[in-house]
Image (cartoon, rainbow, N blue to C red; front, side, top):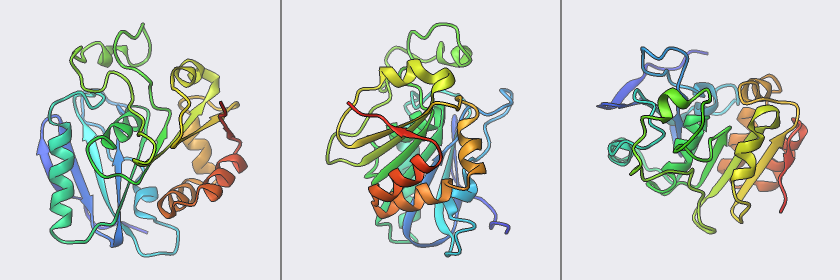
Length: 239
């Protein structure tokens, strides 16, 4: 099933935000990872998941945030871009619940968005814990450009009672990131022993559980979300 054309709601470098119209009072905001071509801005990600394609329900409204600077939410334009795009959606629709989703840098930005917007729930796949002082790794060409004054030197987790964050990590190469995150109330952390940073989302897509994870998250159904995540091989991190 084809989706309607994207409509650009925000275009102020480094951020671009595209909008897909839908129905209902839920808004999903998808944050892109760094992408595959450093010479071009990243493309929108999680399009089917964000809009609910394939669930048999009317499509949801969704925003798709791309960061051409690959700055892990460090650019001062991050908050104005989100606030401006959501305000534009509110001009045409009532929004009761906001969910965020993202992979890697997008997962980090999805967590940061909880500090800007009244987000009910975020699904962050493979988010980095910190972005300053990283040693040589697959992201260092970008992270070394992030200023020390970034408002988010580490991925911010919501304070208890201020939203629900669900993180998902593959342990084959993200063990260090996992252990850097604190264990705290209001956050569920799922660990996949047989998956890597790059294989985790394709694995969940192949198992057909991405839509169910977001549906459960939007419904606030923690038991169902835990059941879906564990059925796909995840283990919930415990203190």
